[in-house]
Image (cartoon, rainbow, N blue to C red):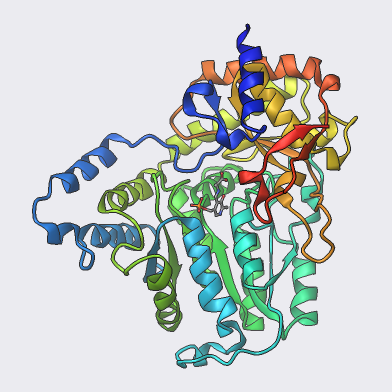
Length: 467
Ligand code: F0G
């Protein structure tokens, strides 16, 4: 039996769900860049320092020293956001924000009334507008009954023109919606870089333009900053000459108009876990904190262990290092160019953290309901042991109103790069495997869900079969 046949058997046993694979069954794991960064020397030192602590109050439920160190790191990196709520990971931040601001009805009140004890729930369905939110963010917003308007710039629909900021928010659409939906507008949300939109960055000037509109409309501006350092780096790359600005300076400038940030620590902050909500307004902080205590934990840990907080605090500063960001984004370019020369249609420019293959175009003998992205990701695994992730019809789920499959603009297969983990040799293995798969792509069959299909976030738990 060849390795390929073995993998074919294995993945069939798992119902073709790539999330079920075990580490030893994978040669190069490009499922995610989240929580996959090995701890640096400095992170290890900080973690072992807390592990050695004898006095329990130093790792306490309240008044935790590690939380203090984490706050100090945030004061240094994000000095404009004095209020911070700790959470167990990014989706925890989303949940607290959605419960405390959207579902509670706080969004319906003007800022000067945020201190009121019980906000008055009004029977209006809230709207959240912005570039494409990540799937858990979308799920949390929808669970809070918000309607999401995807206002990613139309330029995003063109996968071939290498323009620098295809993650931007379309200002015309925003203007239009802010007027038309003024009594339902809960907040604007910018995800930077925009994972769902092929990892495309958002320009600092787009942040400014959105901020001008939201502040004059009295609408809260929220940013998902899981990959804000990458966003800063990609902004810097598009400046034609060196003006001596640091990544931190660009991040600061981008976030100037932002009221609240949701952050997963598992990406740019190089942490194995954790996350936070950053705010400028004390009243908003006080309104959200009880929701965090309810679902995440007390204000001095938010579901994180002391070790995680230490790694987060160190990673937050190390993640800003420009030569590291250069090296990391260089890997995406190397992989993207390699796949392109192998024949694959690849979204350009390549996202900072990942390369997105367009399986809809590559497997144009399949219809979107044949789940071409999932079929392609499964076959890539079988071909060369590389695990990637479908971001297409399977992930997009069903429209809650019609019950029909949602078909996103692209049937992506995302190859996400764990930071500081793989070498050129590993990437060459991926490129060579993809090259072989390209040659037999016409033989790839469509897939379908095995009934019963999971009700929500189905790609995590679904099983599939060949059509
Ligand atoms: N926001 C963005 C832009 C993300 O990419 C993710 C996670 C989250 C929020 C949620 O954060 O995982 O800490 O709860 N993205 C991972 C990925 C899972 O593979 O892209 P989390």
